Structure formats: structure tokens, C-alpha cells
Length: 276
Image (cartoon, rainbow, N blue to C red; front, side):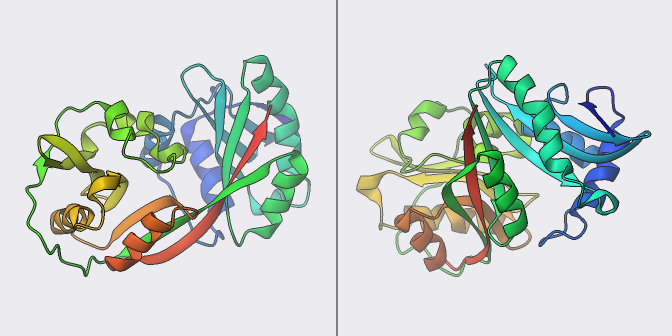
């Protein structure tokens, strides 16, 4: 068994490894080469700092690693070992290979997410030095609430992301951070409600995937139906149930709102962090 980075590995080999590794996942995930390349692009995954475990040419395990612009913060975008190679501590060995490389590249912090019910993986990550920082919920379903007040929904073709961030109560997880929204390009639609000329609520969503990536309502205008109006508009633009992931469990306002408009808790996962 030897370990090396993945920049020279055919995408078809990485896809096959990931599909085998995640086939028995709590929510089975399967990629095509095209969808995995899309994940790599959107999540800022860098194959030159991602690692694979190879056994005589067979890719037995991978860690896909994303990095922010200055490489100080990195993210585990997928760790998987195919069933035939489990029980050999390949996850620990891949981390042992890649962590010194990440530190040398200037990384100071590493993030990952692990399903709440995946106790085995959680224990492994704890042993490696990760600590749980928060619990994240995913919600799915149909919007049953109706806005009591009519609001004009405006399409935002351009916006100041820093200004929108002032509406937040909590920081998005890696996949919902502003850079990842930008990476998604034309698949993302951004809408808002203005009050007295100022943005009082907004949402980023993908109508084809029926997924909401970000939303927020400014504090002084909450409980007035703005969020409901946004979600009703999104639901009308989508062909199926809406999905929104990585909602901070510590935000009572956000979670209560999503449940009140008809969404149901889907899965939960821990965000974990390790200083490098």
C-alpha cells in the first residue's frame, strides 16, 4: 500500500472509489465523473493536496480536500475506503500522510462533517484530533405555510455578499460559504425583499436541484412573513420538495422557522474542527 496525491489519478478511478465507499452510507451517494468534477469545482477541492491509498494500482481509499484562497483553512470534502480494504486503518494512514503536507502548505485549520449516527467515523476523527464544534441539521419537504402579507420578490443579478452577510445570525458551513455560492455560477438564483429600499431578506437557491443554499432575514423584520414569502416563491419555482442542509442546530430562530413553514428534519451531522 502506498499513499500519494490525486492530481494525476484519472477521475474515473476516483469516482469508482467514492461510489464503492459510500454505497452503504446512511444516505447512499453515487456520483458520475461529471457530477464528481462538479463537486470538486464547487467545493474548491484541490486534487494536488487530496490523498489516495493505492494497492498495486487499485485506489482503495481517498480523502478529497478543499482549500480556501490562502490555504489557511482546509476542508475534508469526502473520506472513503472501499469495503474490501476496511479494517486496515486506511483513514488514519491517509491522514498521517496528508496532515504534514497541509501544515507545510500553510494550513492552520481543518474542517469536516460526519453524520450524527456514524459513531465509528466520529471516534476515528476524535482520535485524530478533531473536536465537534456544532451540530448541523438538514431539512426537506413541501412548503405548507402561506405569507400573511404580500411582498414583492426581487431578482438580484448582482449584490454585495458582505452586505448580505450582515443579516446572518451564524456562519455557514463550508459548502454554503460565499465562495461556494459564487462557484456554483448560473445554477444559483438570488432573490430578495426590500423594505424602504434596503434588503430585508434574501435567499440563494437552485431551482433545478430544489435546494436552498443560504437565506436570512434582518432581525428587525423577522416574524413578519418575509422568510415565508421567499420560500413560497422558491417552492413555486421548483418541481419537487425543497432541501436545505447544514443549518446550525444552535439557532433556535432558524430551526423553528423552517419547521413552521412545513419542512421536516432530514438528517443531522457534526461539524468537526482541528487546529493544524
